[in-house]
Length: 290
Image (cartoon, rainbow, N blue to C red):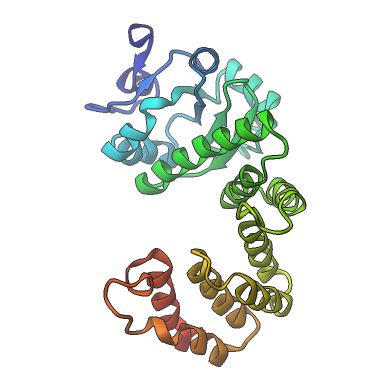
């Protein structure tokens, strides 16, 4: 398969970039990438670009050369597409990519760079636009792979509550709220007594979603969640978002009260060492300026 692929340098030679030393292998066409994804049961990534666009050049210069990104892409079938070509225009129309009209030439120009992810069946999994820094892009690739994995699990067993909960969680992380809600609600319906832990994950995510629309309701739901699942491994995450909801509701003193124990936590505890502990301390430090 590798012999049939183009190197990244070959891909970007056509758009005036260098890509020397890049380690991602690219299929010669986006169709070839999708075919390989189907053949190898992998996800496909299609990089939609326009020649000379700074954000596209940044992806090549910084993200696609990054060792962490190169490693993440080893199990992804990659293809690229110049949106200014006839084939690129057809792709833009087919997948309804956003575009703007060039005020000087009057022609359609796709909003780029566009990052398109597809499952082995050719169905679109996720799209995202703009320059994505290396660490964020590597995380995005991993997240989309997890999305495909849990989609497959749910497809194989529609009554798998834990997979519905995790799938809903991943959709929310990818800002696909409608799909996320659908699977979270299904998880609750399948696991109302939290026998497999799906209900606690789903209820927490749904409570977090409420922060941006109704902080007071989010506070109530998060406090109820902590009362029900206070010993859960998700407790620190719930407390962080409870403080966030208090801030959104204009109740900074209550937020500070929730975060106080994260100020000088004992070494070796989750409050000291976890991601949520670090985020709680960062929020506590920001409170005076909010």
